[in-house]
Length: 356
Image 1 (tube, one colour):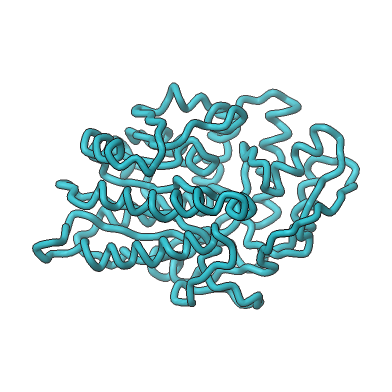
Image 2 (image 1 turned 90 degrees about the horizontal axis):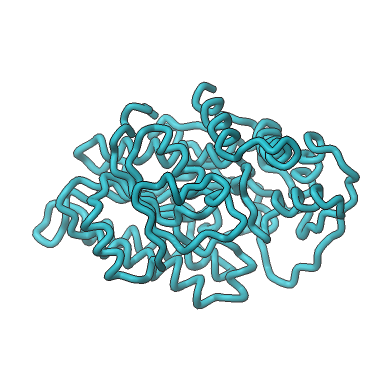
């Protein structure tokens, strides 16, 4: 990734008020990009609010991604060079409770974004973020590759797998040199592993659950303690998205307009229980956790193969599992105990990551 590439680039981020969107926004601001955001309002306790991004984003738009007229107006007015589409209903258990909302946001909202950008009159690279859960999970130890079968047991996974199919169809139908196609629009999808990092306050993710327990000196409630996931610091996949967008935008052909996995190396595939124990190494407390009852189906094993991103994009993860957990835990600890500002902590993490 070349940091000077992003200076003065016009970047649209959907879901900019979310956890990953906030990290991406502060990183791009650091690189000199002009940012336009489209998202629902941030939760009261969120990284977006901690960073006061509502004051720093150049064009801050709060509306539902399904509002096509507003999408059209915003995109036509801003005229982005690059779009990162992160807006989503991102939680597996939430998708069981609100399946229609999940499908409307993750699939139909994404299609409306595609429709809004379809006739762009300037070159535009669109990176659509899906998930590592798009694969038909066979509960095997092997990592999934980009050409493995798509599927999804729960509404979240299925909606994201359906989005991958829709994007592939859209790319074949409307990107190209034929009369009904647009050669200026270039689209890729990115499938990331389970991200961790400072400032995630989601009610249903294991790291914020653990941090809240440490803050209140209460037991950690975890579910599926033996489930293995490809844990990675949030800056890892974000660096992949930036790298992919830069390559797509810089070339006239469509060689990079494809799907890519962005995950950790195989040794970072750890169980939920081991992740919690690793957090306690950097924020000591009484390791006393209760197992929360989980009535919803969730996969037990999920690994990603990342050779394609390495061989084609030249991307590879930088931080090992222990380093990612250390940086994540100390972010929360320094913010909570030492009252170190979230922006300072994020910038420190970003600068260290870029220099690694």
